[in-house]
Image 1: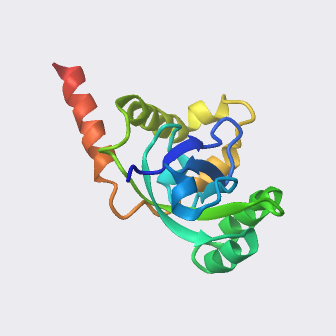
Image 2: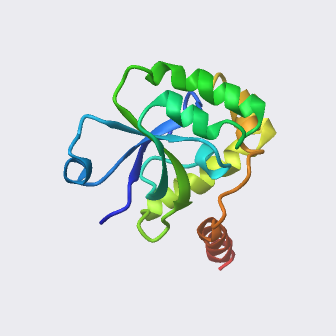
Image 3: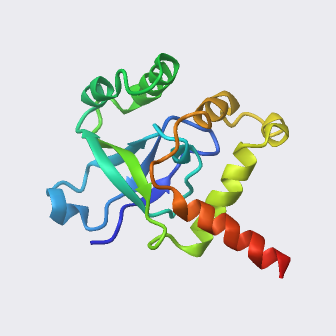
Length: 167
């Protein structure tokens, strides 16, 4: 089955969650009205762009359950920010996930490049200071989160871009 795809990473007004589409969701869980949400608990989750294929870890079928599972796994500051941002999802049909890995083989070349550019911009304090109201404080906190365990694909992509530009 194809990997879930990021549909809204909430980068323009940065937040602590984004949405994904699960291919053929109506057949897998019988409820296509559910909004699949990823919670930004890793560094890469803050840089992931629309169109990126991801491997998910299920958290919960409601906000309160997801928050109980997250309690203690992130800093108190991050937990408060996540809890505050997830408030707007209460009362909606959601399934919450964490990004376990990025599926580089299924991610399009354009999405890979957008991920790389986004990460470079988000790591640049000068760019952030001139980026207007995009949630700069959340980005600065998010970039300090632990990285995904297996993020070799982004390193390979970066090395490939450097090699291509030097030819």
